[in-house]
Length: 165
View 1: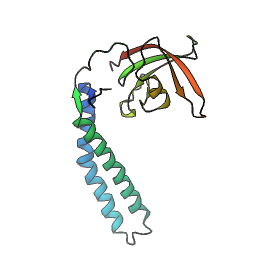
View 2: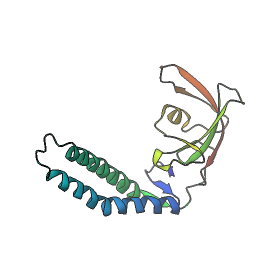
View 3: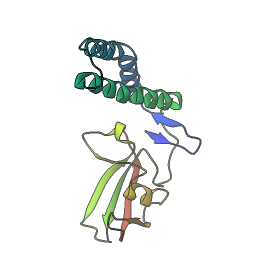
């Protein structure tokens, strides 16, 4: 997954198909299942103290949020290969960094939304402190980001290549 400045999300065909299948499930069978849970809970009586009803409604809300997220993502998606990069860190890149200039203390991660998380490489969001700190920098640059305690940490960008799946 790579996002460009015109708010286009580049997806591999496999990722697009996976997200489309999830959307079809959530808008079809999953909606029917949750509606049945809500109906069954309603039959139990007083809705104010009905835990099953409230749990089903909460599940429905989470499900509908995911439907909206997927719909928006797929509307802005382009399937194929993202434009070639010049070593600049951007979403959809696998980035290797060295902490505090120590070439032996490195971390390699995919800069992408959590929904693109892969089991073969750790994923950091572009909105995370580290992700936003390295975004836009090029290989060889030093970048700074804020730690949870408010202090700053610096890293050196060793490598940035498009994620190949």
